[in-house]
Length: 518
Image (tube, rainbow, N blue to C red; front, side, top):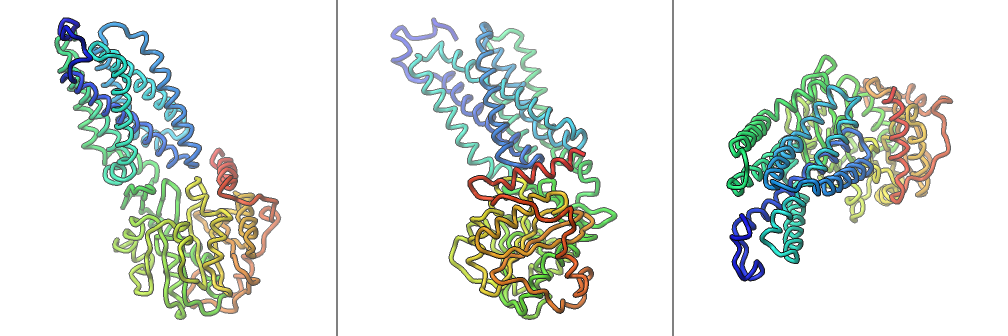
């Protein structure tokens, strides 16, 4: 490609040439790949570090800064631009494509270095991606006039970003998982390098060396893609210690079930949700204080709790006519309905004709007109990020109050009043802010430590005289002890958790962060 190849009447008068079309298509692919690396880094950091808003903000900010650095550095590339572009594409393909796998392995084997590695990789990949577009524009500038060049490059750049932003949560992660998604787009970057090798083969020096580099990069990415399951297993076996019997990535979370000497354990985004050896303590304490106190509950709702353990306890009451389980992730309810071993843990409760499963967001479900309930069991994960934190706000509890019958009780699992004392009492304050009574209590669950719950109701809580037969943990004589708080868990002043501030997420991260640091 040289000036002599252009028509005498100038580039404005002719249509797009094959080289230009190829390079503009490459811009589309480059933009798509760059955004995927940014999204995988942000999503993984929110999975593993919590607080999705903080992680996405800092990762995206760092990535954009790094792209700016790359754009600035592009001024120092003056000759052999196609060769530089090819090398950068291969580097982006290998480093960006392997980024999710590297971070998964780092979290399992060197967790102390995870943050440093995370931001280091984001800086490297962002800088390389920042170099790509300026180089493409300078290559295209030889054949396209400036007024068309910028608009065409930016159009393809934005189209690539749009395509990935839609496909990433809806198709790529659910179907391929994080590791394979990264490797697939690394392969696409390497394919752009091969395409550049072919387009500029007459300009490049040492074409053979470039061809070998392309082949090795493609071979490495294909091999890693084929072995992605082994990489995931290697990382998760180390992280979870016990043997993994089930794992899946949904649009909402990473689901892992392990089995070891202490039985099955469920993890969501790396956070323990239950352990088979003592989950009965957690779920008996969650369900029976409100179910037994209500008297004869007929209509019950469970928000969260897609494992069916709370539903199992609810079905021990003959008065129950219907249970509505509202669980966002259909993968959870499907797993604990169809997996024989896991369904046995919940007593096949999700297959009961009394149970209706609704896979939707609980906040949105409460906003819709619907039935009133005698008991509502709220069993969400702890507020580790703002997506979950909204389910602990005064807005949520105001909606909850509207669906609670006059004599009804709601119970909310509410983290540890010992470890996260202020977080716990923040929930109590938030419940009271919407006009409900908050009755706090706690229980010891070995897998979690001292764990807290709060009953929300219009009427004062009445201690039940009897409990269903066959319970393994609770009894009428020990139940009152759960409502006594020692000095180190006694109430402390706390703010209302609102959608506009979500102070609970920040408080929770600070309190649990101190424990994790030790």
